[in-house]
Image: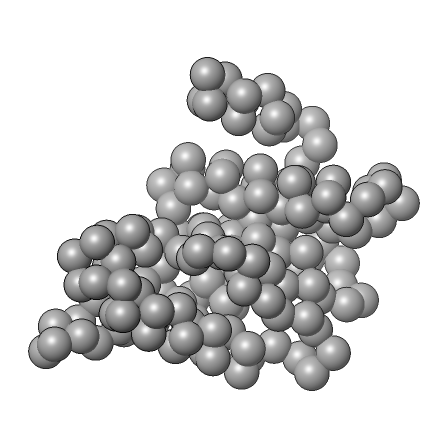
Length: 143
């Protein structure tokens, strides 16, 4: 599962307005959806966040696909009122295996991984590692 969070979306929404932000979300959705396999599941999760459920991939392939989607977004340009804006994303990856007990747990791991990607400078993908203590770090940040 991928958790994709657009970097600096708030800037577009706040400076160009919500109509431009909505248009950006639609364009990004179409771009990502058009580059996924037919059997993969793509959804807007909320705000500027999307999820992707990839079927039958291992860690290496998941990282390869995440990097591909990240690079698509990095190359994409958003046009509004004669100006051009760069769009990037932070991607979190959670592998669904026998250690994942619920959908909520999987989503939480992918979300934590996206937060790690953001904290490491944005515009990158990060594969959740159960040994990296993400929950404790996230709780400390929230505190």
